[in-house]
Image (cartoon, rainbow, N blue to C red; front, side, top):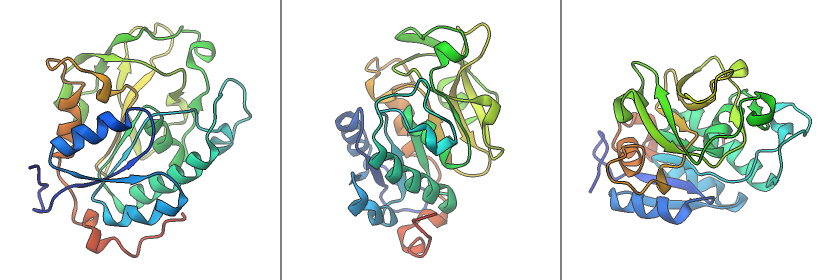
Length: 240
């Protein structure tokens, strides 16, 4: 059973999206309890968690990052509302958080960043192959986990814009197949244990590929600040 550095069992608040069942299985196998957050009525459950995992899914409505709709599609505005508040709460609390695909994009948007609504069109680099290579930044969490380069999967047409990446974040992984614009494939908060990946580790089934379950277990086993103890997080606002 996995325990964090404070000695208590990890409790992962998980949003309902792509890969939900796979993520539940992996988190449980890693020794964590899983709290599902599906709608507004579940919002207060985040106070009882030690970790937050924002899963993949539909595009985020461009109004949340001050853009008109151009190439974004397939919105779920109720989920946008919910996850925006979860992300801001986690950032405020310094809560260990992992954003997967849409989840990474939501972390950026929640902290004032913006997205490419369709990077293949707007960056003129073309869509990614289902499997492609990324490179990672030195002295980053993702470099420690994956090494300098790694093969990942791809199911997205949107991406975090490096031009408007919030100042408190750093890009830590990029696709290497884009000649004109490097698409961000990973980002990390500069002072808090919050990370995002653009790919889907829950769908990588090759045990030898560290971008799969190994990455998820590495995140779950990471250091947890005292402020992520549920007993110390009851008074933080949820509606920032």
